[in-house]
Image (cartoon, rainbow, N blue to C red; front, side, top):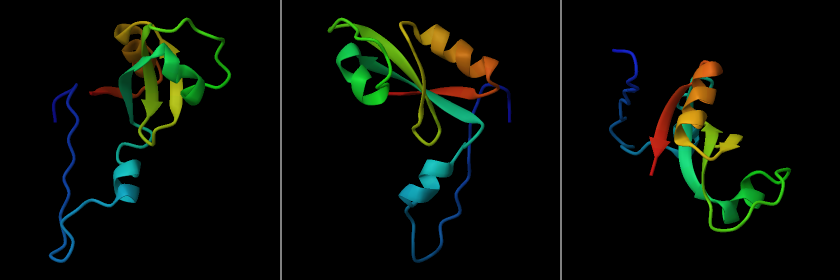
Length: 94
């Protein structure tokens, strides 16, 4: 696999072709983080300790593979840099 690409293989059992939510949540655990664009109005729910932020701002949250919020920033590049500095492969979600 070339650097910068993430892939996984899933072998479906004949009676169950879907990936369970539990299995999906553990994919990439400890190795993958995802960057998600959020609005400043969403910050209190994700980062309760964060100071109050003006409404209407576009921000970027870095999350662990299991959905745990790691950091909040105003640039996608900073979120990716933080992932790399913590030896995590960053992927984007839309």
